[in-house]
Image 1 (cartoon, protein in one colour):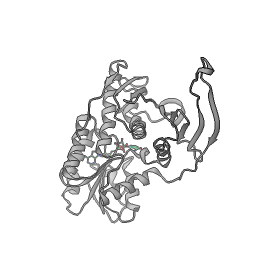
Image 2: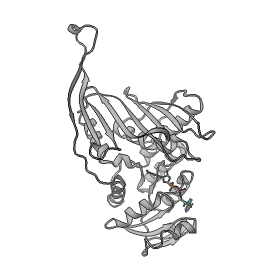
Image 3: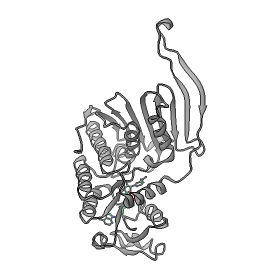
Image 4: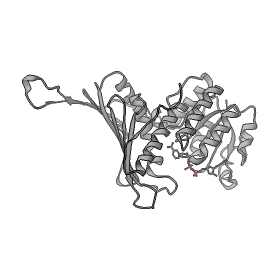
Length: 337
Ligand SMILES: NC(=O)c1ccc[n+]([C@@H]2O[C@H](COP(=O)([O-])OP(=O)(O)OC[C@H]3O[C@@H](n4cnc5c(N)ncnc54)[C@H](O)[C@@H]3O)[C@@H](O)[C@H]2O)c1
């Protein structure tokens, strides 16, 4: 399989490295419109062709797929060009800046029979897979709500707020775990460091079943947190990506349903705490392998164009809410079946 990577500054090199090392995969093209950026990578990939012209990749009939790691505002146009040229596409998150663009790309990929996969890499994290298995098997009982913490005193971006920069990770995981299209979102936040660029954001997603997802996203926080907590009627589970050996902790805790004999209060049950073994495989490697497999077998992935489009719709609706002091925004019906 022949792959070309476009966008080689900060994140793209991680993708190029993974695809280059993968069995059955050839990094045929390395592209960046900045010649200085390309120069940094020439020695690492002597067998690849380097170019500043994205079109060179699309014109190569032997190229199977493109990997797009350029800035977010360019994702929609570059992905559309790839799909129209008959290439499969792997796109960095988020898929596009608007729900309309993202839906159009999902529909275009389907119409052309092309693989479109978004790098929602946490969905492929072995710990998130464990959470998904627990939820789907009913081990948590009825899921009541879940919340994500993604905080740090970290890189302050000037071109993207905390919602668009950090939110795709937690939103994609929540959508994947709950498996429902959200009905309503709200969001509030503040810009303390740069006018108009929110550095702290609190988001809320409501699902039709009544499950609530809550997000705390910030790069202005003393804690470095990468956490997702899921509260069920039978068990509660925490995925903590800052931990090395305790990525997932399952608490056998829950409320005991009120019965007539126990009067006005609800008792709680508190049992064992269980730490399952989670494979330490790098999620980026898994996501890259999954893309290569999808190109080969054409099987759907959990972060295909449609899934990626819902993430963008949530981001877009949250932005609308953010701009109107947290007013709830209803989500439309989304991409057509
Ligand atoms: N999955 C993750 O955890 C993760 C982490 C970081 C960044 N990202 C994503 O990766 C993408 C890239 O982020 P970054 O921080 O590396 O951006 P960046 O701005 O540092 O680098 C982007 C590169 O793309 C090049 N480029 C732009 N338009 C181009 C075009 N039309 N043709 C060829 N080259 C072009 C630029 O010259 C630049 O070198 C973003 O979508 C970002 O959201 C994902």
